[in-house]
View 1 (cartoon, helix red, strand yellow):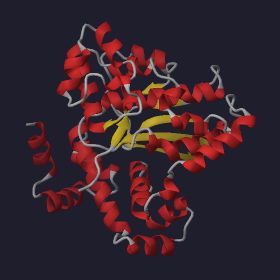
View 2 (cartoon, rainbow, N blue to C red):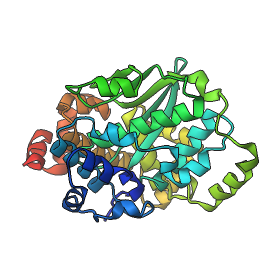
View 3 (cartoon, rainbow, N blue to C red):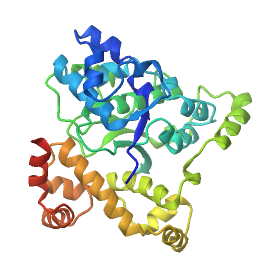
Amino acid sequence: MRHRPTTRAAALTGFAALARSLGLEGGPILRAAGLPADAELEPDRRIPTSAVNHLFERAAELAGVEDFGLRLSALRGFDNLGPVTLLARDEPDIRSALGVFTSYLPLHNEALVIDLTEHDGMAILSCGIVVEGPRVQATDITVAVLYRILRELLGSDWYPDGVYLERPRPVQANPFERAFGGRVYFAQDFSGIVFAASDLDRPNRLANAAMRPYSAQLRAALPGMSDLPMAERVRRLLRAMLAGRRCTAPLAAERLGLSRRTMERRLAEEGATFHGLMDEVRGELARGQLTGSRRSNAEIAELLGFASSAAFTAWFTARHGQPPQAWRRGQSA
C-alpha cells in the first residue's frame, strides 16, 4: 500500500484563531476532518495532508468566505516551514535559495510539489498539491506563502509579473488583488507566480554568510531528494513535470543529473519503469483533477499530455472500470 502523504501540523498555524474570528468553533471541525483538536499545539507532528485540505474547505464553507486560505496565509511567515527555512535562508542568491527550498519541501508537506522553470526571460514558480479531493484553499495558502517568501527574500518593493490561480474567479476578488498587489489571474492552467528570470540572480537579503557552513551541516544531516529511492525521485519529478506539460524520459533524466540509460537502469533495479511511474502519477493527478476541480475531460486530457479527450477517457476507463465523468459523479455522491 502506498504511503499517504503527510504534512507538519504547522500547516494549522492560526486556524483556531481565524475560525473564532469567523464565528466558528475550531475543535469540532478539526475532529470532523479526522484531526486532533489540539494538533496546532504540536507543529512538528505529522498529519494527513488530505485531512488538512478537507478541513480548510469545510471551514471556508461553514464561514461563507471564499478567501479562508488567503486569510490563514496572512498568519504565516517564512519560519512556518520549520527546518526548510533554516536550510534556505542563508543561501547567497534567490536561485539557490529556491533550489534548496523546493528540494527539501517534503520535510514540511509530502504532497506539495513546487517546480521552477525559465522561459523567454521569465521565471515560473508553479505549485501543486498531489492528493485527491478539493484543495482550493490549500492551494491559495501555498501560493500566498510563496509570494510572501519571495518578497522577504527580494524586498518589500519587489512585485511579480503575475500571480496565477487555477481556482474560479471568486465573487469578491478584492482580497486577492490586495494580497497580490493587483497582479492576480483566476481560472488559469496552473497555480504559481511568474516573475523576471533576472530576479533569480539577485542577492538574498536574508543571507548571513557566517551561518552558511551551519546550514550546510544541517542539510547534510537531513534526508533530501538524493537519499530517496530512484522510483520516488522520478515520481516526485513527474508530478511537477506533468503539471508543466513537459514530460519525457530524456528531460526527466536531465533534471536528475543522469543519463537516460542510467536512470532507467536504476529504476529497473527497483522493479519500476519510467512509463509505469508516469502512468501512476497521471492516475493520481487525474483523480485529483476530477475530485478537486471543475475542469472538463478535454482540459484534464490536455493538462496530462493526452492527444485527445477520447484518449484520456479510454486510458482512465481501462484503469478504473468506468469513464472519468462517471467516476467523478460517484465520488461526489
